[in-house]
Amino acid sequence: QKEVEQDPGPLSVPEGAIVSLNCTYSNSAFQYFMWYRQYSRKGPELLMYTYSSGNKEDGRFTAQVDKSSKYISLFIRDSQPSDSATYLCAMSDRDDKIIFGKGTRLHILP
Amino acid sequence: AAGVIQSPRHLIKEKRETATLKCYPIPRHDTVYWYQQGPGQDPQFLISFYEKMQSDKGSIPDRFSAQQFSDYHSELNMSSLELGDSALYFCASSPGLAGGLWEQYFGPGTRLTVT
Image (cartoon, rainbow over all chains, first blue to last red; front, top):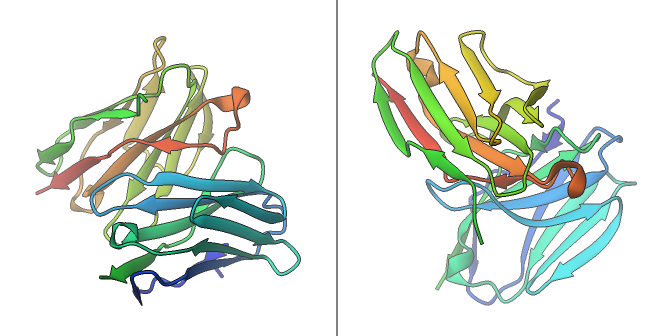
């Protein structure tokens, strides 16, 4: 079993909808949780990060971590076509090596 | 704001040749990471450097080596290239202890094609 599981999609939603992206993990030692956005042929861009459990909001983006369930989520409100990209979750246990999920391809339909 | 710079952006090499990829981290970032990303795959960690010393090693082949220089830029040297080495190679930098080693900012990548 891979340490981090993420549905590769693709996930297609209409513009303006709320998007929910999720990852599960198996290593209970993970403490740092990140979401990266990657456009085609570009480098991953750090969107949000959280430490331990809880929620964090930044504009249209909300990251949630549920350590008891080993489950993290990224919500995108009022989705825009420019949000179309691959979203990678990533986690770290001892704050250096990052383990990535496979990424979910998201398409926002105008 | 300044970002991570990688050069070259594209590189075409033949089998058994060598390649050198360069990475210039964000100013005041002292930690550099190298990743390999195949088509449709997540980035795979290769190697990292903190303050010019190798700090961690991942799935880097013995044919590859890397170092970080006094100005904190890093180079990934790849020898005896194989077709399977064709991939996107990303460099990421981190503020290290000043910010958090997990807080990594990626460069645009170098697309290596081995023919």
